[in-house]
Amino acid sequence: MFAVELKFDLQERGAPDDKVDAITWLIAALVRNGNLLEEFLLINESKGWTVYGTAPARDAFHKANRNEFVEQGIANLTQVNLKRPRIRFLGTVPESSAPCRCTRPRGFFLFTTFLCLEPPVHCIQCNGTFSPLPSSAP
Image 1 (cartoon, rainbow, N blue to C red):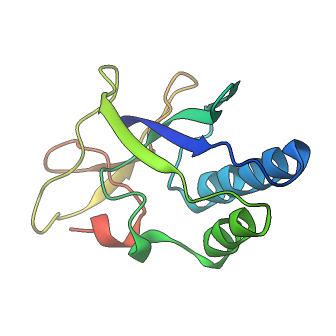
Image 2 (cartoon, rainbow, N blue to C red):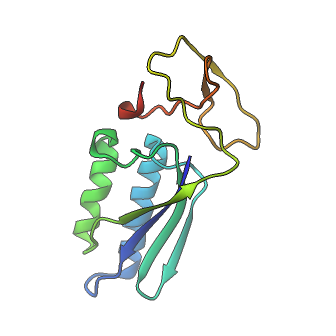
């Protein structure tokens, strides 16, 4: 899993409340789609808004991993005079399991605890986590 930063630059035109609503809507769509994990932080700064969160895979924000709701959330940003967020990967989350890198996994098992943020699907061979995103499938 990777710690990520999504920056939304402040644009002069438009109501700030509408912008926050559009950002929140997009983040909710990303969480529901599995691109971003549920624990995130939205910060209002003088130059815009920043979201800190955790992505299950490095390719979590690729176009192939977006559903119709994420696409709609991105379209909503332009309606309130916001650009797409600048996404920066901050590094790996130390407490998380490594992702599965097996070319042909033989099977998977479910494991989680109340402390885990990572996906509950693990590879039988390497015990790595398996992200449900389409392009990260082995």
